[in-house]
Image (cartoon, rainbow over all chains, first blue to last red; front, side, top):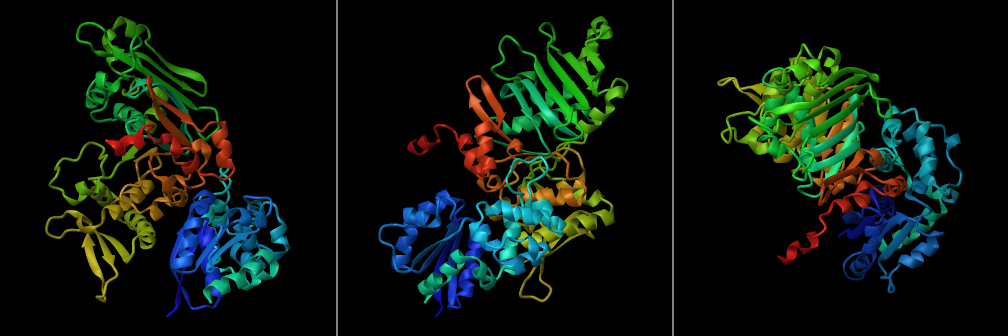
Length: 199
Length: 382
């Protein structure tokens, strides 16, 4: 019988990334439940409970942006509960989920119809990956992406109304874990750990 | 054209109100703070301009008279005033300014008299009342110039703009159970006449619009596969038919009275978005809908209007929905209503709230908690 796993993402994009990572791990795991926590506050509040789930019920994979502390390591240290269950994994994208998205040059250039030359070589080192991704989208020849992912002409919002929707679509249909891991050390580090909790 | 500024005095819950408006405005507030009453200003102006059976007196009477309409907190100054600025685009100087004030006569039959009516086009005054004719004949003040074809010649665009306003608060039960109420109210605020509207639309336009609605429903409603319009052969009544994927080869066709409440509300919303390019007022579009759909309502509105080449159409909606407000909305598009001893106060996001939202927090994080009634946590202690 395939193993069940509980997935919690900080937002829809993190959830979509988690689904892709579990699929990549090759373990015959089904996602029993996936939950978009709606921001880092609710996400953080769930850590303790999810650790208990991991200890008693099924493996848990939690994915969030690592932008709440100076380094992702510091943030993990601050967020992890005292007795971390064997089957519990909290992974942070350095610095945001967008870094992992930007790491797959081939997929992103196909999705946004942009030249690979404009994509950042080392996405983990970018301070503001969201802005970097928006810059890429600004140069996209797909009009709908520009209209819906970028904030409106006079809007004060950081992103457009369709930002998450399109990003989730990208992760589902274009994003390759393998290609992205080759360019993002934080993603490469996450893979063996995820394989371990599912084994 | 869109309304970029609204100023009110003594209108229902609002003793004083001054708010900016943009192409999309989300009105939030606790229950009974006056969200619907705020939308009602635009319906009131529309009612004044109605070519058949409109006018100021009727619009006031329909609302139960001036006493119901005037703010309870109005004491010494009892004039009701509505000031509106209309611009071509957000951030531009107003093309039109229209202002209307009225109050009871104070003696005799207590007729409602216009105390001020003013219109300006591009900064130039085109109407200012009371004028010498009004002073000579007080009865003239029982009517606005706005409602009269002869008198609104120089600012007819304003009257037409108000008249085109659409309001929708679709009540699915009224569509499903026609016997509840045989009478459709003027302007059909509750969507009972939706089928009639669809039926009156030219076939090609209708098919195109229904196709778009179908495309949206396919994604939002599980098993949904096709939507079509049909006239009942026996009675001639218009109906919507939807087919659901089913174990039978041809699926199962259902009539609108079997649709779910959410499906009906979604159809109503999508139809109204496509129907005209004038101001659209939506009352809690989230009702009966799953949060996953609600969270896409702002994007859905944008998409439909963009496809209609009417992206700048003005939409004002009231909402309580956290899912709807969890979107990256423009901080200028949110109006918060807060109940105060001296009437409800309405305000857009302040500087620090706007900064929080620009930093990535959503209106659901920043503004919605302020719309919670202060004592709500004690409700459970009844």
